[in-house]
Length: 252
Ligand SMILES: [Zn+2]
Image 1 (tube, helix red, strand yellow):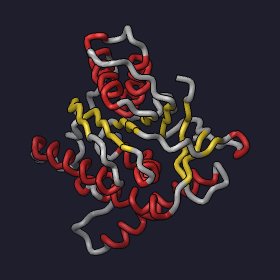
Image 2 (tube, rainbow, N blue to C red):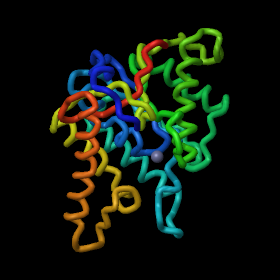
Image 3 (spheres, rainbow, N blue to C red):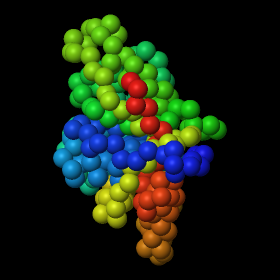
Image 4 (cartoon, rainbow, N blue to C red):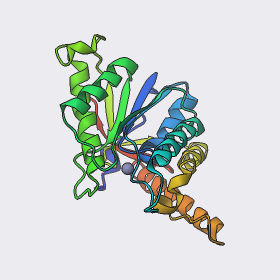
């Protein structure tokens, strides 16, 4: 993420009535914008999730039962949404993890959910983040952007047979060039941590917390410290104590 001059960084959108956060895998939304969603949910926003893949590569165990892993990860994502205070839908598109594409078929699906859930704000991965390795994050980002365009105009996918919908803002997390910060307090950060830790199957591979070792408390503390440090770093872009940074696209 490039550093921005606080003078050019906007802060705090008006609390939306409805928000839709789109992630490649279960846990991406919670990492990318969990505290912002917790803040909005507390203020009455209906927060929806859309997860593009089934999360079936999220294990280091070569003998893992993948059908079981998919079900576990869906339940973890629902628990994480609840931990944030999200009261909306948690939708899973179920594309195989690692094989997400951003083609017309997927755009059809994502734009359908934008039209159906009618969010004021859509949040998703920044597809233009440089040197990003994971293809699912790149594809989920392009899908988010492309689906907003398809959802807003009536002649795209008329077979949806539901009214078109134009969100008022798009916030891209993991931003290549952040220019907007949502500011929050420790209670929202605590809810983000609760949500992240609800992804128990990912503790070891993603959060470097191995529950089978004696120093699990220490590992958990250093994971929490890393999340806190990131929030401090993002908040500082706007001269605030804690924040999540985004690229804001407001002309939709
Ligand atoms: Zn991911």
